[in-house]
Structure formats: structure tokens, C-alpha cells
Length: 489
Image (tube, rainbow, N blue to C red):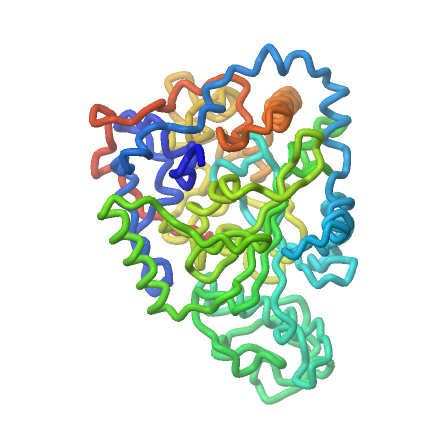
């Protein structure tokens, strides 16, 4: 391996200069009743790296791609991102006898067209898309990528007691899962027909139409009686996450491109009790104290095992743009965020950030989304991030965001941010920036050097360390921020 500390993402090498804190989004102490006891909030205030991790191995950050990128015409990069590299992946894997997960959602390159108004895949695969707020700031389109996420619960959670499929039961259990993961006391649902479901879903003693659930002590349908616990997904839960280029149309509208950079798949293969999860976190802490580097089980074609019940599998572009299985080290890049940070809920990011209730079922749409605050806070999340991070990305290198949302003295133009129409307005790039970031990533694909980093940068960001040593300024205690990944919709 080139980088045994690949779980430390490039953003952790940002120069905070004792003032700017983008780190709070990932590193948090234990929140009440959560299963996540990583308790790593102290990483907001210190560069607590292993000796190996002190060196920034993400060399692609320091590559100046402007000259190479300028040779790619607009027409060429637009044609590149408009090509579908997803639909041919499954038949190719099947022909090769691949024994890991094979993508089973048809026409996903078409983005929203692959789903109905409630987010259900039109191909009958039972994947369900949900509308969520992208995590600041790596997944804001202005920083180089668009994405979408789908969830699928196991068969028992979408079946009546007799084992037959029921969309109503499935919707009910998806709503229960949402309430459990977010810690909600109530959740709205699309209209549920209890007569068709064959059971009294809301427990009111009648068979009618349900649009709200309040009792989360049991799953519905054939899953009734299965283990249920707040802040934990049921065993067998799947997530499908596609990372895409930044699509641009003739009206300069931004959208998820048809071409995919990555197809990421997570499955909760093992169900660990809360005590077992807590012990896994303690063991990780012991290993770190002893100076041991992180280890993960390689499950072969099924991907990497994070030790917390989840298997992660990734496909990424080859030099010609076809999706291929990621290597072990390319997979390792994903493991830190999905196992070793304190902000996640059962190792997930997007589902806890879903728009609450019935309104949140459907393909991601930032244009009908307001800048909701995080739970426990009053101001919009993006406005808050601008203040704390001092920029529109962790490296404070997004000059376009600085020009749009900051004053000349570096302070946030709060009046303008508050007046923004929606999240889309706040996080979309200009046409020129979108195409330039697409060019930059296209060059990484051409070089096939993902182990050196995947950030779509045209030129080296100034506010990033090559190596962190004891002279690096750290943040004072008053720059620490408690933060909840869930949102107050």
C-alpha cells in the first residue's frame, strides 16, 4: 500500500490557522442515546495524527492541472459527462462471474426519471430515493460533485404477515426507520391503506388511511417482532450512493450528470448490539493509543468490513471511463468516514439528513429545499458553516463562493445568504466552474491515481499542509462546536 492512513481524508490537512473550524461537521462527542460513541470532538482542536498520518499523502491536491485542463474543449467535457457508464456495468459483471453485489437498479443514469414521485424505483427493484441535504461541503456541487442516495430494506420489511409484497407496509417501515435513526417522536407518511396492508399500522384500532405514525416500538408487517432499536438500521439494510460529475444544461442549470464517478454500495450484513458497537469503538481507541494503524477485514468481492456490521463496496471509473471494482486501497479511502468519526448515525450520513416525513420521499431536489438549521441551532446550516469554516469549502479555496457569499474583509455576507431562495442557489457553481471541475476530475481518471486523492482541484489549494508538525496552529477551546448531523426541518 502507498498510504496506510488512507482513512484520513484530504480535508483533515486543512490549515485552520487557529481560527477556522470546518472539522466540527465530522468530529463530535457522544450525543445522548446515540449508538455512536467515537467521542472524537477533540479532533476539532488538534491534529491528532499517527506519525505516518502527519504526512499528507494526498499528492493530487498539489498538482496544477490548469494547463492540461485548458486543452479539453467545453464540447468534449460536456459530451463526456453526458455518456452513460452505468447501464453496461451489471451485464459485464454478470458475464465475468463477479460474486459481489451487482447493481440492480435500472436506468439510474437518468437520475430522477428512474423514480416515481414517492422515490420508488420504476424498475421494481424496490430501491427508494430520498431527498436529503448534502453534507457540508464536500458534496456541494460547487466543490466538484453531485450525488444521490437510495435505501432498500430487507424483504420482511416490505411484506404483509403472509409474506406477500405490500407497498404500504414498506412505506410504513421506511417511516419507522427514519423516526428511529433521527430520534423523532412523530413522522408523516404518504397515505397508507391499512386495509390493503392487512393490519392496523398506527394501532388506533381501526383500518383506515394513515398519514402519520407515532408508535415506533415495533416494525410493521412480516418484520413485526424483529429487533428494533433507536439509531440502528435493521440487519440487511442497503444503501446505494452514486457520485457524479456536475451536469450543466444550455440554461446553465446544474444537475446530476448521467456519467458516474463512483457507484458505492453499503449493506448492514451483521447486527451488532449497542454494547458490541460501544466495545468496537473502545477497541479502536485502545489501538490508536498503542500507535497501531487501522485494520479492516477484506471480504473480497463484497468489499471491506468496517467492524461495525457494514460491508462497503465501490466501483470507480477506469481510464476509459468504464466503471470497475475499486482496489483495496481505493476502498480504504471510504472507511474512515463510515467507521471512525463521531458525527454519523449507524455509520450513515445522508439518511439522517433526509427531509422529514412524506415530503422527503423522492429524488434529491435542492431547489425545493430551504437552508434548515441543525437540531439545537437557530441559523441555517450553510450560513453557520460559512461562519465557522471561513469559506465555502474546507480549504477556503473556493473563490467563487467567497465572491458570492462573503464580504471583502472575509466575513460572511449574512443578509445575502439569508435571502437566498433555496439550498440550490447557495451551493451551485457557475457554468465555467462546473466545467473546470469536471475537467480536473477527468484528468484524475485519465491518470488512474486515485490513491493520491480524488478532489477535483484545478490548482493546489493554499490552505492545506504538506506535513503537519508541532508548530501547526490549533484551534482554541472557544472554537469548538457541538453539532448534530440531523436537521430541524
